[in-house]
Image (tube, rainbow, N blue to C red; front, side, top):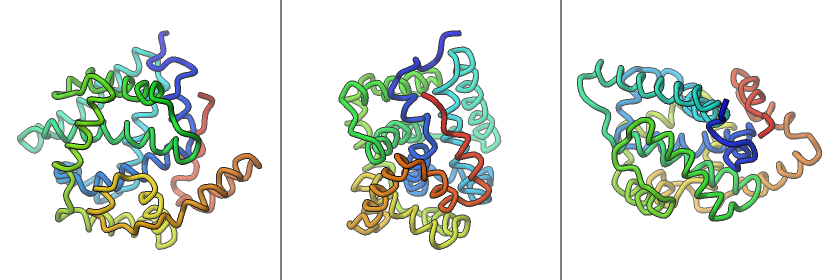
Length: 253
């Protein structure tokens, strides 16, 4: 079967390692808390009940699509669209079109920033390739207002950050739940990872420190991977209930 993303693609390299996916998760968790439409995530009760599990399921779905064949990827995308339509029907009105785009945009943005933090800088062509894969996801979901090129995406992404990110009534509650789920030490590590990953506007809204204290630790972690010590480090950093899931994310791209 024809793969949704071709073997050897930079997108498979990005989504084929648990550590880059964890960083994507870290960045996305900040934007989920600030999005004007976060009330939709509270509507079903799944996000406040298990914020880490709910966010982890989002990135896991994206990863499954990246490594699926064409037919299975399309089926997964349709399943995601169907779930959201069900939520809309239950609530009685539609999720804003911009909210769908915001999630798609953050997956593009953090795919790039996570890989660049832990691996290397991407070329312009590689960034465009990341965009192209998620553009196909958005097109299958029939999202309105999709940008047609990576440059158009960058402009629209900036506009969405300014217009759709706000520290609202759910923001503080969600971060409280992050801390409760992670514990103090892991929560502080999450915040430091976000400092390294999220855009300036998001850092401002969350009043994050400007000094990325985690950066030297990231460099040590990169060395630990060369020495095959990274699994032990991840075992210490990850909550026990998520360790097996994260280790399963590592695959050959």
